[in-house]
Image 1 (cartoon, rainbow, N blue to C red):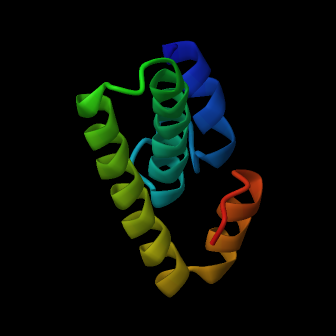
Image 2: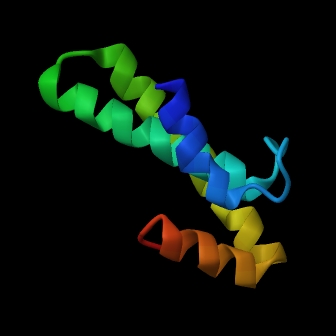
Length: 86
């Protein structure tokens, strides 16, 4: 799973060791959100997973809002690559 996450994040990194830029954070959260959604389809009663999914969605929304306000071109690039509804 770590390799899959690294492959998912790689196109958004500004340099090789970039882990903190908003684009990387958004892509990382998107990967985690999709894996949690798959988990919840199999285990709909998992309340802890639902809660963590909602937290991750809220955190991703904050990063997207920051990018939209400060760097609109990177916001559109990230949202198109990740196919996010904004």
